[in-house]
Image 1 (spheres, rainbow, N blue to C red):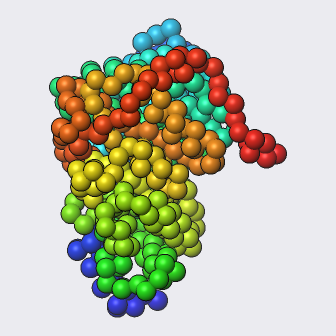
Image 2 (image 1 turned 60 degrees about the vertical axis):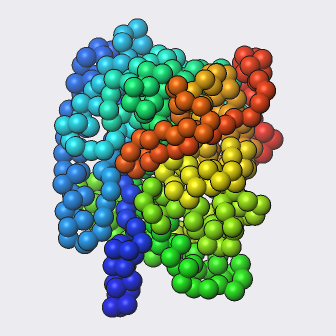
Length: 452
C-alpha cells in the first residue's frame, strides 16, 4: 500500500530534483531480415522496425501524462548490423545505416542503436565493412548510433580492431566538424559490451535476446544529491545506506514504467538499468553527489573511493526494486553531460588520468570527453586500449566515447546542446604509442578468464 508521504516524496523528486526515466528502449531482432540482396534486407528492416515500434513514442507519452513521470527519450536498439550485413559485404553497407535512420525518423524516436560490430576475438563477414563505413554512416544520418566491442575478459583485446577504431573516431569527427564533431558523440568502443543496454550511444540488441523486448534506463543523480544534503550523515555507513534506500525508490519508478510499457505494447519486459545518468541541468550531477559526500571538488584525492561507494550502493539498492536488472547499472561519469564534472575540469581538479582511475570502480568508462582536434588516430587507439585493459582485467564493461574537437585545442569548448551538453577540450598525456598500436594482433585474455 502506497502511503501519502511516499507519493508526495516522489512528486517532489520529479518537480525539484530532476528525477526522470531517461529512456524506454525497444530492442528488436533483425535476424529474420537477413537477405543477400541489400535493398531487400533494408526494406525488411525498415518494415519490421516500423511495425514493432509504431506505438513506442505514443506509449511513452501516455505513461508520462497518466503518471506524471517524465520519460525523456524513446529509443530503439537492433541486432548488430554487421551480423545482418554479413551476406551483403560486397555491396554498399551504408544503406543499412540509412534504413535505420529512415525508420527512426518515421517513428519519431530520439536515437536508434545497433550499427554495431562484435570483434573481440576476430573479424567475421561484415565486420570490416561496417567499421570502415562508420565515419560516413554517422555523418549522413541524424539518429543512428554506432558501437564496436573490441575486447572481453574471455577473449582478450583485438588490437587490430583497436587500431581501426582510433581511425574511425578521428575520421568521424572530421566528417562532422561543421556540426561540432557530433558524429563522434554517437560512437562508442566497448570492452565486455552487454546485450541489453538501453543507453545510447552503445545500445544494441544482442543475439541472445528475445525477438523484441522493452528495456528501461532510470536516472536521478539530483535525487541522490538532495537526499544526502538533507540527511547530515555522520559516517560512511550511513551514506551508503541512504544511497541504497534512494536508489530503491528511483528503481521502483523505473520498474513501474517498464511494466506499463511492456503491457501496453504487448512486448516482454527485459531489464531496468539502474545507472545514475547525469544531464547538464543544474543539480543533476554525479560529481555533485561525490562533493556532497565531503569532497571539496570532484577529482581531488578520495574521489575514486567515494565513487566506488556510490556505484556499489546504487546497485545494492536498485537490485531489490526490480524483477530484472541489467544493462550497465551504476554511476555514469560523462564529462560534457555533467555540470559538476565540467566545473572540476575547468578548475584543474579533474583530468583524463583521474577519470581513467575512476572508471575502474564505476559504470562504463571514459565518456563524452572532448579532446584536442589534432589528436592522432594512434593516440585515440591507445586511449581505447588502456580503457579496454581495465575492463578486461576487472571483468567489467568499459567504454571510450571521446570527441576530437577539430580545429580546437585544450582550453577551448565544444557545445553539442541538449542532453549531450558542452565540454571543455581536455589535454592529453605526452608521448607516442604509435609503435605499440601498430603491432596489432590480439592482447591475450587474463588468467581470470579461465573460469569454466
